[in-house]
Length: 310
Image (cartoon, rainbow, N blue to C red; front, side, top):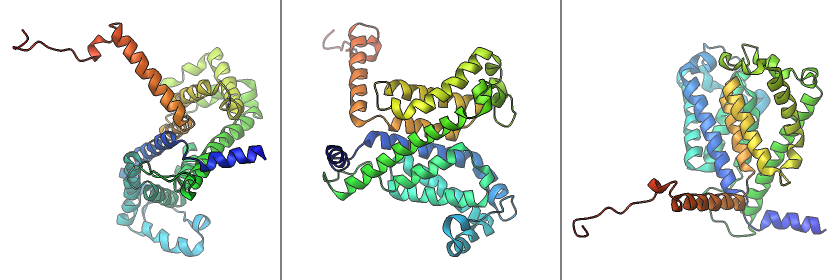
């Protein structure tokens, strides 16, 4: 009973992860804007009436809704409107303008594009859509809700859902890797890095080193399997830093910038508001110490003599 009371208190007292949620919102907005910036010029080819897109949203929305929304791809203007709407939503998320409306518009536009051409998706699209769904229930960045209100409860449930989704994602991926032959042999990253479709040519030499490949392969499995446990221990900071490093590596070696962006946003999302405050205080203290010792003297304002004082 004590555990239930503690959980209810956590959900009701005050909105959690306000800074982390804002960082995640910016990350999702940036990755969506990256997609718009790189794909807008090819919108007609991908999703237009004469393009390679062939699908519909029947599996997502049902036959009746699908019949009415899929007509947007019957014209070039309609196709351009959908991806432009995604761009507007991305800007709204980055600037924290109409957060829930922007999340809803981004989610709807993404689902339309997915239904039209599902083959264009990468590993980050699934988690992005799930996060956008939960963002519909997050409090706006500037909101000051009354403690123990229903809005606070719904916000915290969405926060909890996002965290559980990330833990599930890592744990599932870790178990799948652990049961894979190439991952057990320690050669998975080498094989992926040498495939033209999955890697950037400039980074292939890194994984030709057997020590690097073996360590990175087994290290990835270890990181993912222990992630749900490590984030509740003193190793939380180390695991978050390792996760950011892994996804930066994925962006640089495989070119999966949208996937890496949302995953880094989710890593930073796990840092609590009190931990952000502690980090900011520590950084300010270190800056003050460096300035006082003269290392960063140039960062502090220097009084210049005036005609009156000279």
